[in-house]
Length: 319
Ligand SMILES: NC(=O)c1ccc[n+]([C@@H]2O[C@H](COP(=O)([O-])OP(=O)(O)OC[C@H]3O[C@@H](n4cnc5c(N)ncnc54)[C@H](OP(=O)(O)O)[C@@H]3O)[C@@H](O)[C@H]2O)c1
Image (cartoon, rainbow, N blue to C red):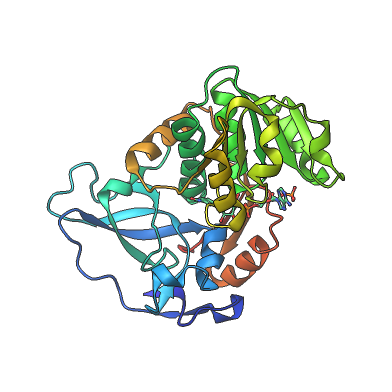
């Protein structure tokens, strides 16, 4: 089958187009999917760079990409909720391999049918980023109506879902983005306050003891520096649990009522069903920055690695 893959860790140049073996036969609880599209996440280039090689080992060739959408073409004996022909979406943990190939084999438990009101290709933009922000805000922080939520990196893949999920819970949202995205935050997402991180000392204008939740989707805030903006029982959540500041933050929070939390997204079909329903109810919208063809996968990764994406980036495999 055709695939984009790499045979050693490294920069963008290690990504190759070519043929790799088809997936082996499906197990009882698995389905075989003909991939329509995959979407990009920073995890893809972090893995490809070898940042997590202690857990991904040296198993090559590896395809890239976590998110996927596609059509079910074979089902295992105990698969009950999906049938051949269903259009599905989800994300793979990429511990062994990714989704940048014609066919993938996945466990039924991570799947959901695509939302009925969006295109199959657009659906690929949803799972990993939406589940991260859902699990961070709804499950870890347990946000409720009227909570004040500060979101850093609000214009990125995870951020756009974070803002919308917070609004869906009737939270009061302050976004942090560069000046490029301030008006987009105000006009499209109706944030209550939009902060520009390119201003020197941009946090100084925010009040102390103000926020119930600070969600750092970009991953560059330090708990130690920002904790005074939290209410006394407030929660700080980062998407980067492994950096030094996070380890320090975790220790500092042991001596504080203000809590340090980190999210590690869990691929879960039940949670994805909730997101699917919100999309169908038009409570959450999809924001696609760019769509690339399979042959342009390098360009797609070059773009996401600028860290300037405004929403999600999709690669169409099935063209
Ligand atoms: N732990 C987990 O399970 C998990 C899950 C998902 C993601 N993550 C991590 O979360 C991070 C963000 O992921 P993503 O998918 O949202 O990335 P992304 O889509 O690539 O983020 C791009 C956005 O980052 C913003 N940005 C760039 N520099 C910034 C800065 N200094 N301060 C604030 N925002 C800045 C950009 O906005 P401007 O153009 O306005 O600067 C752009 O809109 C990545 O490190 C990713 O690996 C972790």
